[in-house]
Amino acid sequence: MGEVKEGEGEEIGNKGGGGGNGGGMGVVRVLVVDDSPVDRRVVEMLLKKSGGMFEVIAVDSGKKAMDFLGLNEGKAESPKSDDQKIDVILSDYCMPEITGYDLLKAVKLLKIHASSHDVI
Image 1: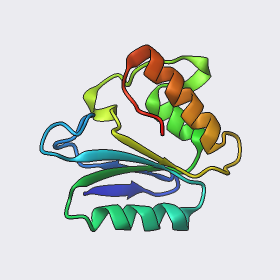
Image 2: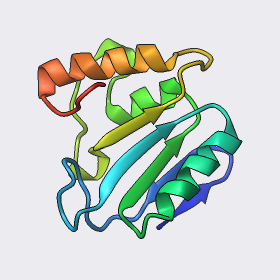
Image 3: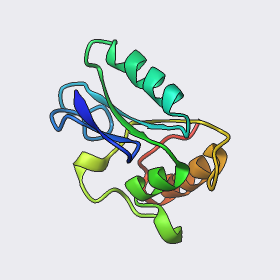
Image 4: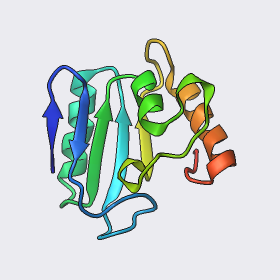
């Protein structure tokens, strides 16, 4: 489904299907945000066992998630391409630098501007 880039805490999934809102071949793109490599790996493995239904992008910090989503430096921009669109964000709550709560607050602001993510 993808390959893990060593030392970066990020996985880039396959490029087929997905692309936001569960489009394409029914692949749901999930951004997993957790500073614990063990927890990230467990979530990734559980999602992959669902028969290819999920494409997992895993990052190890709220800051990297905000960069990936185009929310860095206080800007609220939509992802530049369909390859960056995310359907679901699973985030740890307690992380250094940016908490899961702060990340989801920023995503909620993006939703107001770009109408792209539901925050639950």
